[in-house]
Length: 357
Ligand code: CP
Image 1: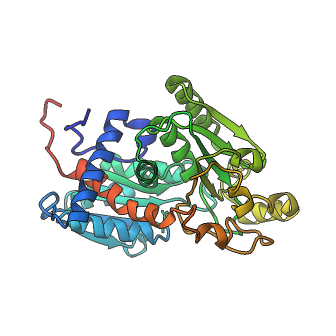
Image 2: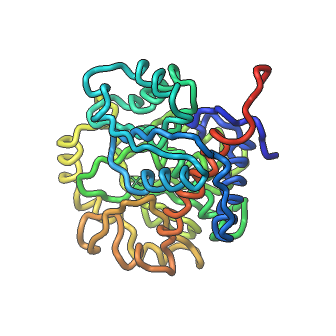
């Protein structure tokens, strides 16, 4: 059932804080807006006259461009505020910043995951903003979750297979070799939950030790799979993972073992990867691995991806990511726009809540 009382809600960790009906409301509104976009129907009355402040503590292409375009298409004005130019840089507190900015705008969207800081710090920052803010805080990726990506990913699979439930079908989130880049565990953690909850797929998580995810997220996904009657499996064998999969999502993330040691330490991470290079080289998306998947399978990646030759330590080879037979990455990236319009319309447009709600 579509919910009509979501105006004013924070979007910080909807994977664990929003109900199924609330998440489906976002997806239904997002598809509605996408159909209007295709047909050239304007919907600029939804956020007319409203302002959005974007705070990117980390780089972004897709999220930045889709947030600005999406808010504008809904009739509002989005401002890309660089935290480095705010008085935050001079030590003004998040509490003051959020309290003051939220008296002037209608939503604050934040991306924050910080190298070298303890796991969870990025998510905690968003909660600090939320504590002082009078308007919704929208998570554009923290060190635990990337829920905007999760909505776009679910929408893409629904569209590609023309089904809203894919029970009994295998979704694989696999680790892949990423040279040097700091990649949070946010996307795999969001998607193993979203694909279990929303699409009711059988989820396989594949990675070489020690690239585990947060044990609390694993436990929660196991409980969800029990509740929905789906499978959730972990394997350390990439070929076994790809075998018979309908959707594969191979992507790098940093080691949980290293995160546990007080945050991401690049030199430790690189040292470990160098020592285990031979066994890690096979962790990349190749045509040979894709041939093990089910007929009609798709390859997903949130982008940017590390692309290179099969003998190089990369996430994917060009023969897979640039091959329309498998790759849906551009459609997936476009759905960032439509998915986020759904989120912004639901949280910031719609029917204001009364004092009794
Ligand atoms: N997938 C994603 O969040 O892309 P950007 O880092 O470019 O925003």
